[in-house]
Length: 299
Ligand SMILES: [Zn+2]
Image 1: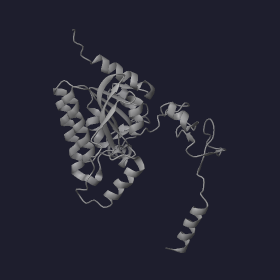
Image 2: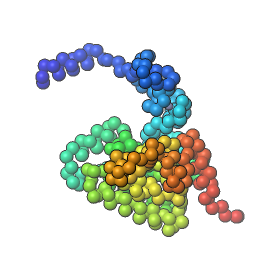
Image 3: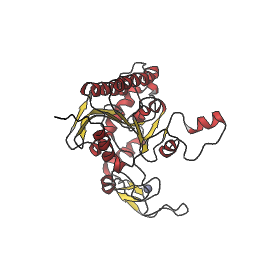
Image 4: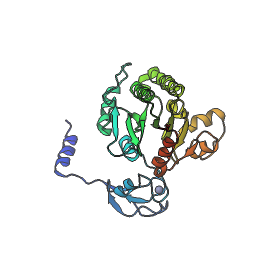
């Protein structure tokens, strides 16, 4: 081991450096450097307006900035906890793990790293639960795991969840958050677009209800398949939703695109979404829709 590295390690043992993030109260002023220093993890700074909040307060506010309404990233299990009735979630297929069919360099170590970092086995969590008493099959993607990319396991878990929804005659609700196809699985990843779409067609033919909620970001093959196929297509405010990136489109069509291009609000204006729903209203809105679609038979 080089001498310099040794010294660094010894220093780490004897002196545990506290990690600080520089934050400031109120609005960010570009010409003024940020003043106060607050321990990282305790406070969170909004990347949009610069408002700082106690991390716990932010969590209580469903990770929505009090200053500007910016919706922070949510992990799959935070989302499930926000959505379903307490203690009413049963996870499916948690043991399904990705293989490395193409022997893609460094794919396995990257998967292991993401597992450790996120505590998840893949980029989607599926299962069933109740929302204000209404049962539903739920799939929630997590962008911390390989950018929420759609590999074979993501596609398989979603297809299996849809099959459960058909069998149990439950509505299917999916929260997407994805960078698109998983390049390490090549064409096998792209095949998941067809597989999940075919499963949704079966659900539709069986009279099943599918609600898609697009969260930031929903891009690439995911936006071009299951995320856009809902009977209801919803999104969270400010979510980036699109197939190709802004720069690629600008270079191809040789035109400048509007500032709000590929945001949830832009898509709503163009008729590609049914509603943009603030996170605080999601549970109530979904419960209302589930209620509306519940068949009640007279005794
Ligand atoms: Zn903010």
